[in-house]
Length: 225
Image (cartoon, rainbow, N blue to C red; front, side, top):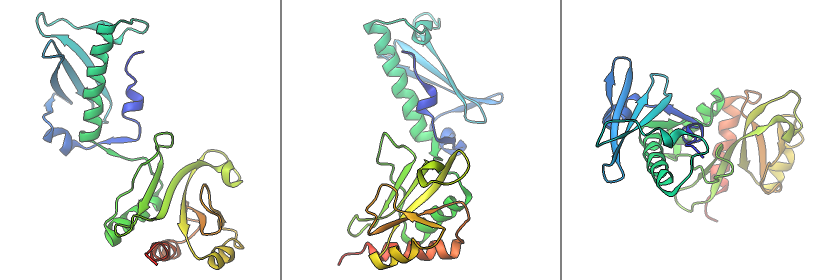
């Protein structure tokens, strides 16, 4: 198999400052960097477009020729596999150091993220490889979760329409959860204990004021007892 750039840079947005800080130089419109691999047998020439799109070439150091086998589908073998692994490591490193994560895109979600950062200085944790667009938030003092933001298909909540929607799970006392679920804008907790958690959509159906108040209550509810 050839290197899957879409997977490596999925949910990633170029951070130009980080790109330049990590040794990329501007060549005309694009940004480039050569990185040695395989004990300097090869150089990986990585090219980044202004929109963040990435391409690369593997150049043999001794002759300056492109080593095209690394990108030929169906070509196998231990040596070409080793070159691909080295390239993949380089590209993965670039995606981590020069790009920001932008899994969560809804405008209300971004406001929630900003509130959590400013109020509690807490960053999202992407804990599940199978679900890269699930973000957990936990208190620093006891490491208990107080919110989980997820991107799910609308059908999971039996919502009308097609496509995905960003949702948030928050914690509350059982009697509060019961009262909330009597309203149309709240749902039984998705993937969490339905007695202590509930789900809300991050689509503006609930005002920021109410949503952030519920989030603050969830944070307090997750405190040490």
